[in-house]
Amino acid sequence: MSQITMSNLNILVTGSTGQLGSEIKELSSKYPYDFFFTNRISLDITNKEKIKSFCQTNKINVIINCAAYTAVDKAEKDEKNADIVNRKAIKKLALVSKKLNIKLIHISTDYVFDGKNFKPYCEENQANPQGVYGKTKLEGEKELININPKNSIIIRTSWLYSYYGNNFVKTMLRLGKEKDSLEIIFDQIGTPTHAKDLAKIILDILPKIQNEKVEIYNYSNEGVLSWYDFAKEIMKMSKLDCKINPIQTYQYPTLAKRPHISLLNKSKIKQKFNITIPYWKDSLDDCLRRLGERK
Image 1 (cartoon, one colour):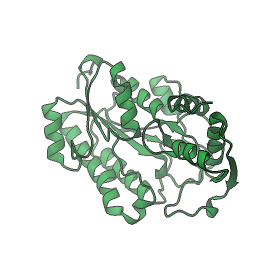
Image 2 (spheres, rainbow, N blue to C red):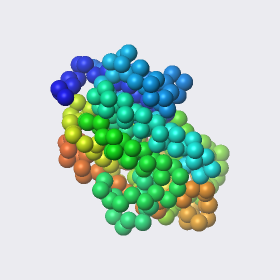
Image 3 (tube, rainbow, N blue to C red):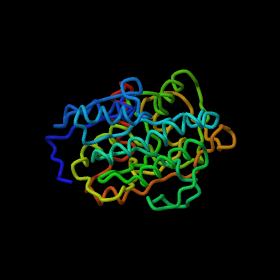
Image 4 (tube, rainbow, N blue to C red):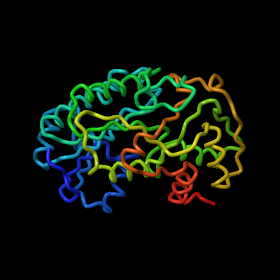
């Protein structure tokens, strides 16, 4: 395959109304690429022929798949639909990518791990999802790896938040204005990912992705914290007078089991593409400023 230059990239972004897709859309004017932003209405990614037709018509040579079934608890009772979006659709995107020589960037999750590791997860660590969401995301990864379109990668990320959509940061801001105190879990450890940072990395590394087999990379912001620490910092930066009390996971039961430790080792992506990853507090500061909540 000849080297794709920056000036002739036609990029299909699926799931473009979600957090990551929306951030890519906002950044898109800063890059010399032609973007095609789609959602479930404008392009059915569960239909292989529709994907193929869209890609051929628009001369697509890169797909960034931001579409996913992300309702973690709902997935426990809705495995069929989670599987359709998180596995079957990936298989179809991969088949079309291989057939048409398209570079595919697929977004996955820290939930493919069981959270029992004592140190940050590397890409080659054994996956062991504990719930339907993680299981279907891992199965989607496997479909892509087995079909193996050239120049394609999987990026696993964690604790995604953004200026757009619904997320932990926005929930904390809303509740912090409504309540005097909140109980937040302190025994789940990881790192938040500002979707804007991930979007920028994806667009920056696109021309540099050259691999014969599908590669997996981890990406989150830098640092280590709990959901409790995250909530405390949101209140502090926003100057909200809401007390955050630490609780343990068992005190807040959910349908889906969450990983206790989901730290991701980002050495591989940093070394491969020579990138610097922002510290989580700096990225949170940036997001809160965009939301008009930094006091």
